[in-house]
Length: 216
Image (cartoon, rainbow, N blue to C red):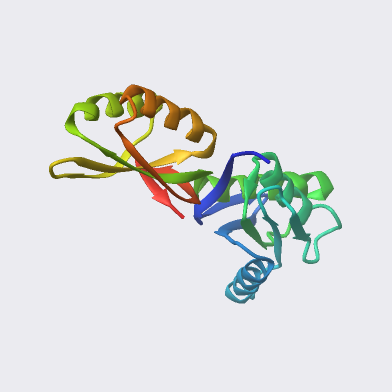
């Protein structure tokens, strides 16, 4: 299982015109089949007058659950191409509905596949996609003599300090990726000759969004 995976943080939309047919892709983050079904149902209700509302979604860190629907388009020309975009981009926990308003000109099998894939890509381009990973919240307690060394060790690894409290000592919180946990702990203990106090919290997922750490 990959420690880092891509997911939709904020859903969005995109639009493509092919031979006067209008394709509207809407993307939504989802965490369960029930959420995906509710989203797809809402899009069908919103675009009730459309020719088709084709959809696909993938759930799980390893794409454990995937579903797609052609919604009346020729078999394999809509839902699967949308799903293929999600899988190729390796985006997890996301649903896409591509709404088509028929423009009067048949696109053919190949044309439909390309149009639905292009639409799904446009929808993802209009969304905020982030990289999530597993980590642990670390509280570091140190005296002022060890502060500079700890700040150096964190900066060296690209780790941001979430918050700090300065009294007679310093307390700071850092989100640490799981694959750095053991090595960082060893480095801080050695770098401060064992004077720093390290307290690990529970595992959680986090992502860097606009330069800020967001914990999920």
